Image (cartoon, rainbow, N blue to C red):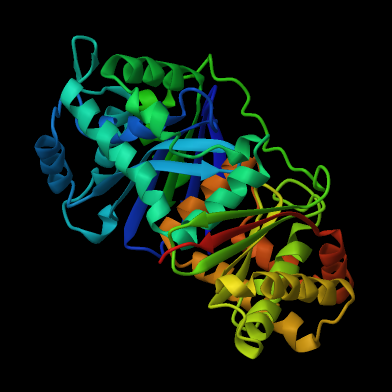
Length: 427
């Protein structure tokens, strides 16, 4: 049985502990939560990668690698994530549970110390970041931004969100823009680092067998537990219950061989922070969230209108998105059939088998989360960013109680906002 505790260690500093003897590895995280977008967007996306290059005590990757080897092969990776309308930047680590290795006492504390060192005591030259490290990670970030378009299946949903949420923070790119990235210098990056360190909410996490009090004591010995008096209250993600105006249809030509059709919907307010989220998960799953869903069986299998078709409930933002790959000449008929299946849900054309299948899918997925400490880390960061504390076990109990009427109500609350078609223009 997992025990989840959350404690405020100091002003602007929170620690979430998932205590369980189930795993032989411990997972730790230290990230800064900041508003998404803005003039510092690319700087913040670059920041953890530069910090990961060296500290005052360990000035390069070789020294850091040696330190990790001494911590029984612990792993620390840079984190840049979108959580609702927030940006999480920092570090994620996993290491062997010290109780599993003779003589490994203090291993967890050692990893926590290294996380603190990476975030709070960076390697600098002339009171700014190392120019070589900054230049290298600037180019990596530019490449990362450009590479997003190389995967049309992933790029189409990103493009949809940018268009659909153009006037909302959620529409801002997580890595910033190429133009912002090209202007990164060691001086600008260090100034952005100082601002982020001052303004951000710090989210700490531990998953493993150690008692929360023991983990808290380890963090308390590091700069990570120091009060962040300038950290303001993190703004809540804006959730629009309905589209602002009529649904839009946007078609863009790209050099791809297969068209990508993405539809964005508002959920009537269902989200992590409001509405009937459990019913919406059930609706989204039977509509397009599994291989037994309406979209998969009807649009893909029976009518062969697309190569893939699935629906995703973006719960932090209160959006549902349908993504599919189609031939260019099937745009109209595929779009109409996707919407027709939505109408079927609105009209209550839902079988008991579909409801049972959706319930099993969600129960299985959330149950599997309990068996993966890295997935638990991601889940609880999302909860922290949303200001909620609902466990996977509670989610399972919630969907078990959802009936047909609530599923139909969720479908009826769904409103089309934007249709985006990436039309293949490749020769």
